[in-house]
Image 1 (tube, helix red, strand yellow):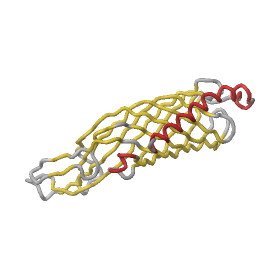
Image 2: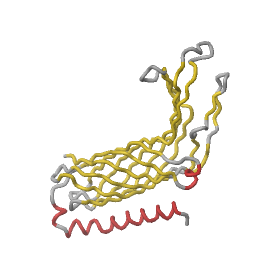
Image 3: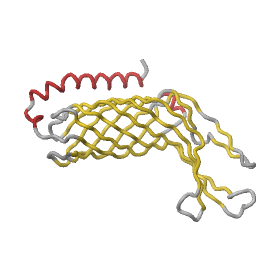
Image 4: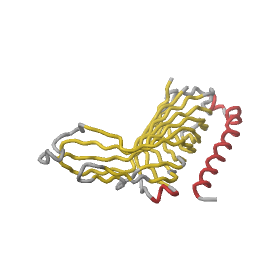
Length: 242
């Protein structure tokens, strides 16, 4: 059994264990009968570490994440998690003339390689005390894309943008985390520290150096096809609602 699969199995086992234990905790612990928020929203920064085949082609990624958890029981043990993220895994900027007929005007052409992911699934939270561990699993998709934009070297914003290459893949995520309360009450604010294993399956994508522009204006692509699994570490804040 390879390392990626072992990690996934462990997270799924933890998810199942909490699912079994949570109803008993709700019935036995008086603290869990206190008022809890009906929903929590949050977000933060993500650090992505490619694993398996993906790690042979991409070194590192990072970006932003956001989530919402709708609590389905009064003890706030079981919730529906909706999450999304944007992660950049490569970027390069080159300077070129605006055109073959206007070589005096230079533009900066920036090419970004990024992933947009979205998932929905159950979350189980041990919702008493100042530190609340949770586990979750989601099903969704990931969108891999390479986009180029151009702006004048003296300008702040691009004047043109194009998607050069993209691909969709189904995604399965399993993860765990800790909510460390910064304030209590019905609308708590908590520091959110989490890790998840994102399985994207086989995907076609570009990385830095996969695009080549010739002098005649033509562009060639050399896409890569591989598994695109990642270990994602998250740092953020969660806020209770309602």
